[in-house]
Image (cartoon, rainbow, N blue to C red):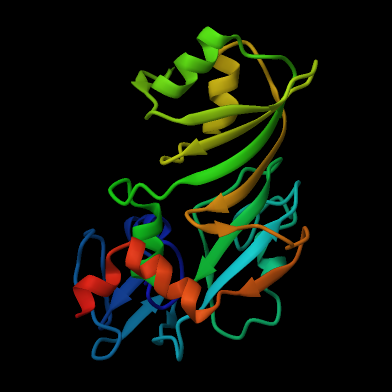
Length: 236
């Protein structure tokens, strides 16, 4: 399903458990069930899936006040607006929360998406954050070492001060992506995040992409990502 560009693996699992998937006429409810787009008749919500004609890899600048889903029951703006005109069906890799902005990747390559999000690949995501107060040196060190969130300590993180002021800016690097993680980490120390922008995923920078803009990744960029994700090694 992720290979067909229907959804990410996590969302696909939800759709299976909801009984929305049929393989060769039978409803599939068991996660991990094998099926092949080339030989099996696969339907989601009664729509037949087809293998994508080409693999697409897209970088976009998600604006604030936009949800990282392709549709929204509350009728809010969604990231689907960022990829209008893209003929193949693609979906976002991971997410940025409603009030955050920055670099977001889209693809119809299920394995690529899974590798980017996998905890094992440790792809570094870089953010710039404006807070409503300054972390002490002790708090900065605790932030780097990990803080307890919902009973589980966060992985070691990078943080450095970009500007010292009443409302300072920080650069933060994470290799994990729990929901609202950065906001929750600052809240742990008694501060609120006023602005949050993701500026880099791995080596790929947001650079000159303006809010609402998107571009296709260059072949060299895709190849570099696949090398980092060890996808090129396995295909040899």
